[in-house]
Length: 303
Image (cartoon, rainbow, N blue to C red; front, side):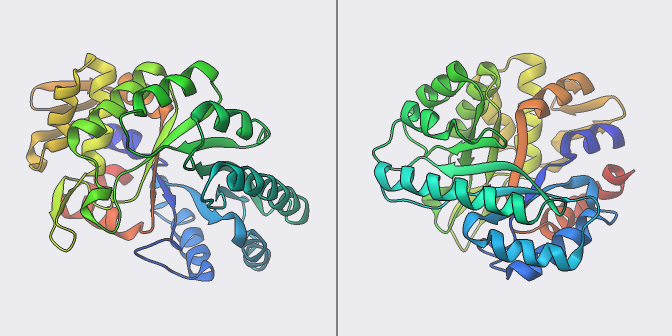
């Protein structure tokens, strides 16, 4: 149980403390990140998320903190209204990244770049525009539309760029239903497209958020659904059933894997799923950890 849960969630969180709803200062975010990373909760941490426009400030904070080892960073690209503006913004983002790497070498590693597909830009155009980010993993955020499957197919055909999808936000429309998210998980895994999720995944198990009027996905539901699909080649409906699960008792953790309502996934399936499922962005680390603790799973995961 301990090994399977830790393996499933190891390095699952990219910490995005400056983003809503937390909206912390960058100084607070950097302090939290380094404290989490270097403490007993570091097992669940991956990268620190920073908007490209804040890289200079980040460098100054890291120079004061002198992190050892250097902090791994995910850069969020500049927003843009349309394709032309976006391509200009990408050029400026490349310059900002290069300047940061030159000035703050040894303090941080800019490992990943994330950017949102702008209106009026095709995935094919975006892939060409992103080719120049050779030193970073790139994730293209794709909006939830009927063209998601085709977008993933284009990313799979080209290779080298992952997909990012949003699983929450300020209103109910930002939360994809289980069938929509299930189709995304199935297609990304089947097509071997690296992917990550962002927003709305603060709690382990699916639940209702009354203030928003929406059902929020649980991060345990999502990760276990991915591993179960790798193990059993589930249908979209079967994946959605895992995502819809609101009873924590439906999941059983063992030394060599886990089970969900009679279906099991072993360590190899967990590893294969996580090879593609990079994790999720969260403005909180405490909430996911508190959720695991409330289920009696946190000690098992840390062991």
